[in-house]
Image (cartoon, rainbow, N blue to C red; front, side, top):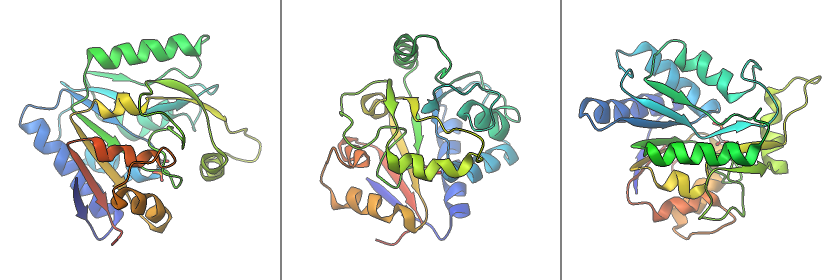
Length: 230
Ligand code: PGA
């Protein structure tokens, strides 16, 4: 595991874009896994401002809420369209359909697509409780794309994005740990004190189901980018 310590989230975002550029220019980036959340906002801002050409790249997102449409400002489809895809064309973009009538079938469809399009790079944030994507504490390392009930911690953190008259979904669809671990390279970003506990668990070097981020210890090509000095 390689760790790059940066001074700020902005500098971290620059570094992430640089790593993506390297693979793109080397011709080794055909499928890019993307993440949402506040960590990734400056990353997409910098991608949009860059001359990077993603027209030969297929994108897959990690997760999506169940029950809110792509037109809802808190859906991850909306987030991706507005922060990246509307400005930077990709060959194809994929995100789980949280409005699917049959959620189990939707998970199988998504996982099949992932198998057909192996991820070259997967960008990842970390939850304060150590989740990666919406793989909450207790998730099996064998998990593939699945339906998840969000934990109290995740609901408390993410409810800040929902106004009082909006109900935050408590169910989501997420790539599983195994789906994520298939990626050739993982770029993990964690900025700010709130991520310290999760990063400490990762750097402690022991895999624990209670801290899903520690599953990354079993991946051969992980880059961690953080402004925390541990
Ligand atoms: P954040 O979320 O980027 O908004 O901190 C990260 C995550 O929960 O995975």
